[in-house]
Image 1 (spheres, rainbow, N blue to C red):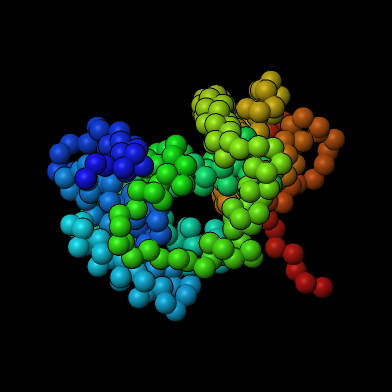
Image 2 (image 1 turned 90 degrees about the horizontal axis):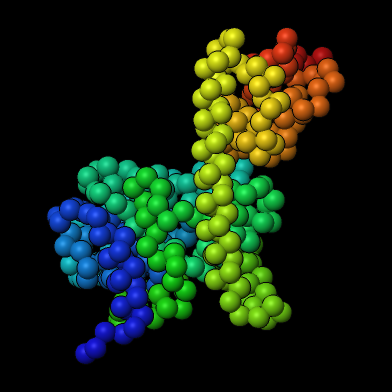
Length: 328
């Protein structure tokens, strides 16, 4: 039987991603049992000689473990080996359940890759997922990086389907695959579900088709710009940190000569290295520290996440542990 165009497109995307790998290298597919990851697993098995999978049970629904075992059994029947079922420990971190589940999932996937000595871990995100991520980033209003979407590659992770629409990927799902329908994907309590089922369809109706593709292109452009600015900021941060009078401080005068976009990135890097948790460090925190450079009027220290505060002293920016205030 002739291969369907959708199957061909998915297989070609995976093959392009794996083209540089040595034969015999183990590739793991992160497979939730949903159509995107099932199509990815089938395509990877068709184009590569050694494919395994990781099925993550987030423990958020009582039936999740049984679904994970059914998915794993199907993957083994397709010839994937090893197929690991791993439980994730989802701990709320203040950024919401979605973010906590994502962080837990990536920890599990990374550990599985180390355990099996896998060369890569493939993720099944599509162009529609990318569009949703861009809209969520716009809603947060946290700068260029937030609308740059998901990268095609980061460390051992790869997203080979990021240029393909969700409909095309779903069309490549093998017949008879036992798909998992996670109710969280349609739960309007979650921001991504609202974007997927309400916001994007409304934009398609009001502005015309092609919105998802346009948002994905925006992500590509934003990521290229953010990467370029990041490189400039990294170079500036290196020079400033190693040229400072005291280790861990920044001299204010050279900071004042930086472009605002580079300055904010230098300060963010410095703050993270100084102990501020990156997930909790917002653009407003960085802006308040920036004003210690650009709008200095003798103001006091800026309180930051992680029990840290930034202050200006004798022409330098410094960090210290936030003093403990005694109860009256």
